[in-house]
Length: 191
Image 1 (cartoon, rainbow, N blue to C red):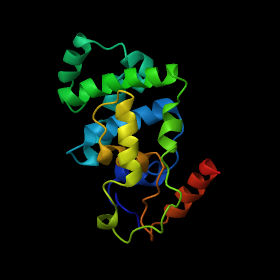
Image 2 (cartoon, rainbow, N blue to C red):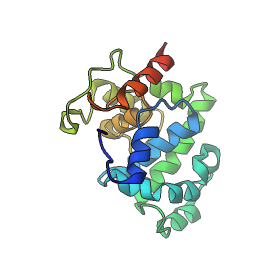
Image 3 (spheres, rainbow, N blue to C red):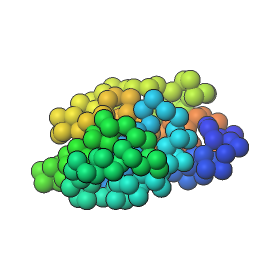
């Protein structure tokens, strides 16, 4: 039995093929952080349904392109029904693209930064979703590090959700058949 998503093909595919599998590409990590910020206060399925709209609106989450967005782009995005239209989140996504470029200029890779906060031990897996933490010591430290590099809208909860989405932690439930696959892939990255 899956951790979540049974009965919804979009959710099932996300669970089985993406959630928790290691992400090491800068653009893909930037996308996950951006989408997790947009998800704040909403159901994740809302973001999944709009993900292609987000990708189109934010130039495929190419940090170099998004960093060039200005006031006209913010106005365009605020009028785009294909995404979640929240000015603070839109502006944060643009600011975060600029922060990615500043990290790069400093010789720091966003994916490497994210993975540097991987916990030493994966844990045994919770028995239910209510047993999963919303934040951890590592996610609080990651959020602080990201903010120190100019990132916005990445508190400890959003940072933890990004850690889950990118496979930095494996929060598939103990009985989930995907858990061992994710853990194997995660261990390959960490070794």
